[in-house]
Length: 82
Image 1 (cartoon, rainbow, N blue to C red):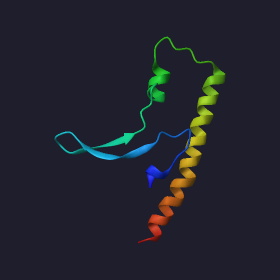
Image 2 (cartoon, rainbow, N blue to C red; image 1 turned 135 degrees about the vertical axis):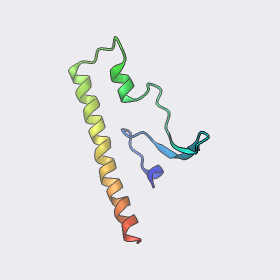
Image 3 (cartoon, rainbow, N blue to C red; image 1 turned 180 degrees about the vertical axis):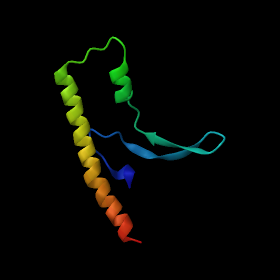
Image 4 (tube, rainbow, N blue to C red; image 1 turned 120 degrees about the horizontal axis):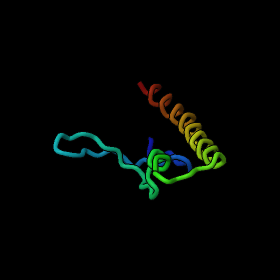
């Protein structure tokens, strides 16, 4: 399933847990030392040149391409079982 997908540009997914008194669900993922991309880009006093921004965008695209290809296979297998 999702936990079997591994790519250097995709945060590893470990599972889902019930969290809080209302039993809401939370995802368990790999810990990212530098935080999320959103936190990275919104950090004050951070200057990111255009080259670095392009590299980050390309890495994100490679990760999304991997997920698209592999989740599609996973979804097709799941649908065929029904």
